[in-house]
Image 1 (tube, rainbow, N blue to C red):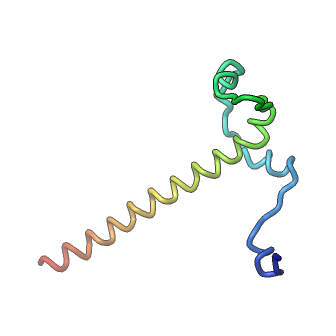
Image 2: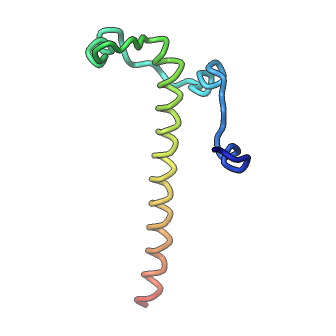
Length: 87
């Protein structure tokens, strides 16, 4: 059973709202590429890719970029501490 606190941890989107989060993420996949990726009985089409997967890939890309930046900032910070300790 999900209580009120757990329910607040998740955001809910209508399909159109989610699709709009794609922003300007380009669709670089073509129908022939999708055919090669499609599994048995998989009915995914390019409209589904645009509406669902492009926003998801944008979100994942933002997470990766933020994580890389965090590591860069941490390395800079720790490098400054290491230089101070060796002087």
